[in-house]
Amino acid sequence: MNSICEMTAHEIRDAYDKKELTVTEVTKAFLDNIKEKDNDIKAFITVCEDEAMKKAEEVQKMFDDGKDLGPLAGIPIAIKDNICTKGIKTTCASKMLENFIPPYDASVMNMINDSNAIVIGKTNMDEFAMGGSTENSAFFKTKNPVNLNKVPGGSSGGSAAAVAASLSPIALGSDTGGSIREPASFCGVVGMKPTYGLVSRYGLVAFASSLDQIGPFSKDVKDNAMLLSLVAGNDNMDSTSANVDKKDYTKSLTNDVKGLKIGIPKEYYGEGINNEVKSSVETAIQKFKDMGAIVEECSLPITEYALPTYYIIACAEASSNLGRYDGIRYGYRTKKFDSLKDIYRNSRTEGFGEEVKRRIILGTYVLSSGYYDAYYKKAQKVRTLVKQGFEEAFKKYDVLITPTVPTVAFDIGSKTENPLEMYMTDILTVSINIAGVPAISIPCGKDKEGMPIGMQIIGKHFDEETLYRVAYSYEQESKK
Image (tube, rainbow, N blue to C red):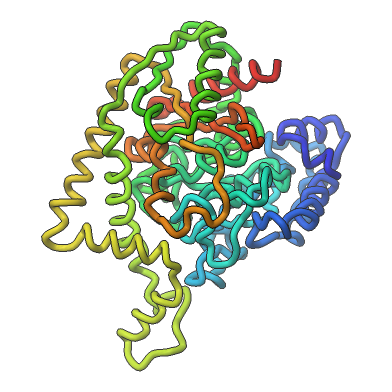
């Protein structure tokens, strides 16, 4: 069983084609692995055992009948629990939506289901995707499979942990300020935050609508490219969806970076970056030089304003998006009320966790009369400057390389008393969401305790091909 679970999605798919494995055998192996390990890790909120086995039998019959199926047919996949799944609970790890069963599928789920991939469960997360450690779930904390005393990162910690622990070969997460890349770095897997608008947000429960983006987790770069190829593309159900054609990103995995121009923004290597993290990323950069890439130091001076700008915009949009949870239309409703006002107040007080309340209050404050111009309007102006900073850098460089997170995974509970310290873990990732550009985190080493270190590769709008090419080249070089 374990040997099946250690395989990548493309290895499993090859085994299907060679008739070495069946879909039911593979699906059962992963479900058994979840039963064995997930009591300790707690990556999943919901495991879809019956649905997964039923689908596996259907897909195996298609293989037996000689049908031409896509690259992800019969591959188990885990889904972050803020992506709507028809008939399967979608809780956002919140008491507010504890029993919510969506009557429809998110657009990405339609693509997943049409591809005949096997949904094996919904993964734990920080409540409403607000947090960087998956400690803010209303149900339980997820642990890092590399070391169970450490956090897996967040908010997509369940998806990252599921892939890292071989509970699923691939997974979907969402990234608002680093929520795919940070857990990918902490758990030692590959995580891609695509260009804003490349993947439909229809059916993704909104946190900050102008920043949220769905993206893939995987064990290697090829699997990641396969999953993004499936879920990317225009969707008329999402007004922010970009009008781009479908692409096969696996075609860009050429293992060649000769002549490629790589910028190293000095602001991302300054104070607060752990020495072992810095050293691992610098060693990786040297590898690119050895492979023939042109590497130069550059500057993104507006970076220091990215974190406050992000938290103003994200909290403002969260305050607006979470206004709909009022105890009336759907979601949790309080039992204690004498008036309509009591229903609103008590349902929200009891239904939301501390971090969500904190961000709603902050967001409502920056949008309020007298403070809107001083905070929200100013943050939107700085957002334009951040975007322009990246545009200038990309006139000269094909990609930028930075650490993904300033540190390795920290101990569970070590930052919960200090929200500001927790927010600082996003310092290297938030500017990418503000600018709407794509970025991928890939493993590039370990610290002396064996905890994974991630390297972030940032690209131009809609140039995911170059990111995959660079990431794949490094991955192949590292295997030598």
